[in-house]
Length: 194
Image 1 (cartoon, rainbow, N blue to C red):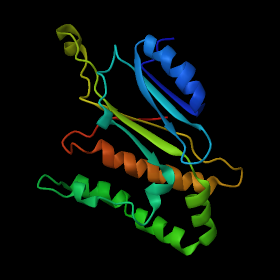
Image 2 (tube, rainbow, N blue to C red; image 1 turned 45 degrees about the vertical axis):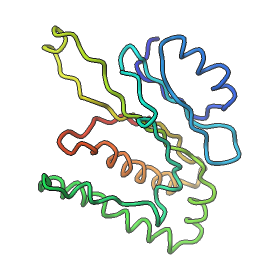
Image 3 (cartoon, rainbow, N blue to C red; image 1 turned 30 degrees about the horizontal axis):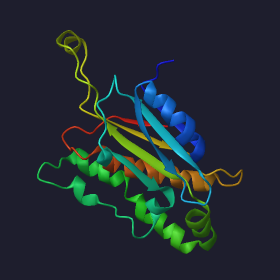
Image 4 (cartoon, rainbow, N blue to C red; image 1 turned 180 degrees about the vertical axis):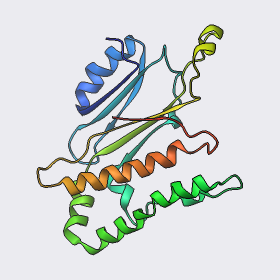
Protein backbone atom coordinates (compact mmCIF):
# COMPACT_ATOMS: atom_id res chain seq x y z
CA UNK A 1 0.00 0.00 0.00
CA UNK A 2 1.08 3.57 -0.63
CA UNK A 3 -1.22 5.62 1.56
CA UNK A 4 -1.08 9.40 1.29
CA UNK A 5 -2.07 9.77 4.96
CA UNK A 6 -1.76 7.26 7.82
CA UNK A 7 -3.52 7.79 11.16
CA UNK A 8 -2.98 5.35 14.01
CA UNK A 9 -4.54 5.20 17.48
CA UNK A 10 -3.55 3.37 20.67
CA UNK A 11 0.08 3.37 19.60
CA UNK A 12 2.65 2.38 22.21
CA UNK A 13 5.21 5.19 22.53
CA UNK A 14 8.24 2.86 22.43
CA UNK A 15 6.90 0.99 19.35
CA UNK A 16 6.32 4.32 17.62
CA UNK A 17 9.84 5.54 18.38
CA UNK A 18 11.70 2.30 17.67
CA UNK A 19 9.71 0.82 14.80
CA UNK A 20 6.84 2.73 13.19
CA UNK A 21 8.43 6.14 12.79
CA UNK A 22 11.87 5.00 11.56
CA UNK A 23 10.33 2.63 9.00
CA UNK A 24 7.83 5.15 7.67
CA UNK A 25 10.46 7.90 7.45
CA UNK A 26 12.60 5.65 5.22
CA UNK A 27 9.52 5.18 3.02
CA UNK A 28 9.10 8.94 2.52
CA UNK A 29 6.68 9.88 5.28
CA UNK A 30 6.76 12.74 7.75
CA UNK A 31 4.72 12.61 10.92
CA UNK A 32 4.45 12.96 14.65
CA UNK A 33 3.33 11.19 17.80
CA UNK A 34 1.17 12.57 20.60
CA UNK A 35 0.94 10.78 23.92
CA UNK A 36 -2.27 10.67 25.97
CA UNK A 37 -2.32 13.05 28.92
CA UNK A 38 -2.23 10.15 31.36
CA UNK A 39 0.54 8.00 32.77
CA UNK A 40 -0.03 5.48 29.97
CA UNK A 41 2.68 5.48 27.32
CA UNK A 42 0.33 5.32 24.36
CA UNK A 43 -1.26 7.79 22.04
CA UNK A 44 -1.83 8.66 18.39
CA UNK A 45 0.53 8.76 15.40
CA UNK A 46 -0.05 10.54 12.14
CA UNK A 47 2.05 10.35 8.97
CA UNK A 48 1.77 11.80 5.46
CA UNK A 49 3.59 11.11 2.23
CA UNK A 50 6.18 13.73 1.35
CA UNK A 51 5.72 12.84 -2.32
CA UNK A 52 2.10 14.07 -2.09
CA UNK A 53 2.35 16.83 0.55
CA UNK A 54 4.91 19.52 1.28
CA UNK A 55 6.97 19.04 4.44
CA UNK A 56 4.94 20.35 7.37
CA UNK A 57 6.43 22.94 9.68
CA UNK A 58 6.41 22.38 13.44
CA UNK A 59 3.74 25.08 13.85
CA UNK A 60 1.46 23.17 11.44
CA UNK A 61 1.43 20.16 13.80
CA UNK A 62 -0.73 20.62 16.90
CA UNK A 63 -2.09 18.53 19.72
CA UNK A 64 -4.93 19.22 22.13
CA UNK A 65 -5.93 17.21 25.20
CA UNK A 66 -9.62 16.43 24.67
CA UNK A 67 -10.42 17.29 28.28
CA UNK A 68 -9.26 20.87 27.68
CA UNK A 69 -11.63 21.52 24.77
CA UNK A 70 -14.69 21.93 27.00
CA UNK A 71 -13.28 23.60 30.08
CA UNK A 72 -14.46 27.03 31.19
CA UNK A 73 -11.08 28.42 30.19
CA UNK A 74 -11.13 27.06 26.64
CA UNK A 75 -11.77 30.03 24.36
CA UNK A 76 -14.82 30.02 22.14
CA UNK A 77 -12.96 32.41 19.83
CA UNK A 78 -16.11 33.63 18.17
CA UNK A 79 -14.30 36.75 16.94
CA UNK A 80 -12.98 34.82 13.94
CA UNK A 81 -16.50 34.73 12.54
CA UNK A 82 -16.93 38.48 12.80
CA UNK A 83 -14.70 40.58 10.63
CA UNK A 84 -15.07 43.09 7.83
CA UNK A 85 -15.83 40.27 5.40
CA UNK A 86 -18.45 38.52 7.57
CA UNK A 87 -21.49 37.30 5.70
CA UNK A 88 -24.85 35.89 6.68
CA UNK A 89 -23.35 32.45 6.11
CA UNK A 90 -20.67 33.21 8.71
CA UNK A 91 -23.35 34.05 11.24
CA UNK A 92 -25.13 30.76 10.50
CA UNK A 93 -21.84 28.95 11.08
CA UNK A 94 -21.45 30.65 14.46
CA UNK A 95 -24.99 29.73 15.51
CA UNK A 96 -24.08 26.06 15.07
CA UNK A 97 -21.59 26.40 17.92
CA UNK A 98 -23.70 28.42 20.38
CA UNK A 99 -24.45 25.17 22.20
CA UNK A 100 -20.83 25.09 23.44
CA UNK A 101 -21.96 27.33 26.32
CA UNK A 102 -24.82 24.91 27.07
CA UNK A 103 -22.42 21.99 27.17
CA UNK A 104 -20.12 23.85 29.53
CA UNK A 105 -23.11 24.63 31.76
CA UNK A 106 -24.06 20.95 31.71
CA UNK A 107 -20.58 19.99 32.87
CA UNK A 108 -20.73 22.58 35.65
CA UNK A 109 -24.13 21.34 36.83
CA UNK A 110 -23.34 17.60 36.85
CA UNK A 111 -20.42 16.68 39.07
CA UNK A 112 -20.11 13.07 37.92
CA UNK A 113 -20.12 13.90 34.18
CA UNK A 114 -17.60 16.71 34.79
CA UNK A 115 -15.41 14.38 36.88
CA UNK A 116 -15.37 11.66 34.23
CA UNK A 117 -14.76 14.16 31.43
CA UNK A 118 -12.00 16.08 33.19
CA UNK A 119 -10.28 13.32 35.18
CA UNK A 120 -10.81 10.06 33.31
CA UNK A 121 -10.49 11.31 29.77
CA UNK A 122 -6.84 11.39 28.71
CA UNK A 123 -7.29 11.22 24.96
CA UNK A 124 -5.48 13.57 22.64
CA UNK A 125 -6.42 15.27 19.37
CA UNK A 126 -3.70 15.56 16.74
CA UNK A 127 -4.12 18.15 14.00
CA UNK A 128 -1.93 19.01 11.04
CA UNK A 129 -2.45 21.41 8.15
CA UNK A 130 -0.99 19.87 5.00
CA UNK A 131 -0.28 21.57 1.70
CA UNK A 132 -0.54 19.39 -1.41
CA UNK A 133 2.48 19.55 -3.68
CA UNK A 134 2.03 21.73 -6.72
CA UNK A 135 0.72 19.94 -9.79
CA UNK A 136 2.26 19.94 -13.20
CA UNK A 137 0.51 22.25 -15.70
CA UNK A 138 -1.28 19.28 -17.34
CA UNK A 139 -2.58 18.08 -13.95
CA UNK A 140 -3.75 21.58 -13.02
CA UNK A 141 -6.10 21.70 -16.01
CA UNK A 142 -7.80 18.44 -14.93
CA UNK A 143 -8.60 19.26 -11.32
CA UNK A 144 -8.06 21.87 -8.70
CA UNK A 145 -6.38 21.10 -5.40
CA UNK A 146 -7.06 23.03 -2.23
CA UNK A 147 -4.25 25.18 -0.86
CA UNK A 148 -4.29 23.06 2.29
CA UNK A 149 -6.15 20.27 4.04
CA UNK A 150 -6.65 19.86 7.78
CA UNK A 151 -6.15 16.30 9.05
CA UNK A 152 -7.18 15.28 12.56
CA UNK A 153 -6.51 12.07 14.44
CA UNK A 154 -7.91 10.97 17.80
CA UNK A 155 -9.23 8.06 19.79
CA UNK A 156 -12.41 8.68 21.73
CA UNK A 157 -12.90 7.56 25.33
CA UNK A 158 -14.28 4.04 25.57
CA UNK A 159 -16.50 2.58 28.22
CA UNK A 160 -19.70 0.67 27.35
CA UNK A 161 -21.75 3.12 29.43
CA UNK A 162 -20.02 6.30 28.24
CA UNK A 163 -21.68 7.13 24.93
CA UNK A 164 -22.49 10.58 26.34
CA UNK A 165 -18.78 11.25 26.97
CA UNK A 166 -17.87 10.26 23.40
CA UNK A 167 -20.64 12.56 22.13
CA UNK A 168 -19.24 15.47 24.15
CA UNK A 169 -15.77 14.71 22.82
CA UNK A 170 -16.97 14.52 19.21
CA UNK A 171 -18.79 17.84 19.50
CA UNK A 172 -15.77 19.56 21.09
CA UNK A 173 -13.46 18.12 18.44
CA UNK A 174 -15.69 19.32 15.60
CA UNK A 175 -15.85 22.79 17.16
CA UNK A 176 -12.05 23.00 17.48
CA UNK A 177 -11.48 21.70 13.96
CA UNK A 178 -13.98 24.18 12.54
CA UNK A 179 -11.98 27.00 14.16
CA UNK A 180 -8.73 25.65 12.70
CA UNK A 181 -10.04 25.08 9.19
CA UNK A 182 -11.48 28.61 9.02
CA UNK A 183 -8.22 30.45 9.63
CA UNK A 184 -8.61 31.68 6.06
CA UNK A 185 -12.24 32.88 6.03
CA UNK A 186 -12.17 33.22 2.23
CA UNK A 187 -11.43 29.54 1.72
CA UNK A 188 -12.00 27.14 4.66
CA UNK A 189 -9.76 24.11 4.33
CA UNK A 190 -11.21 20.66 3.64
CA UNK A 191 -11.13 18.40 6.68
CA UNK A 192 -10.29 14.74 7.24
CA UNK A 193 -11.02 13.23 10.67
CA UNK A 194 -9.67 9.83 11.70
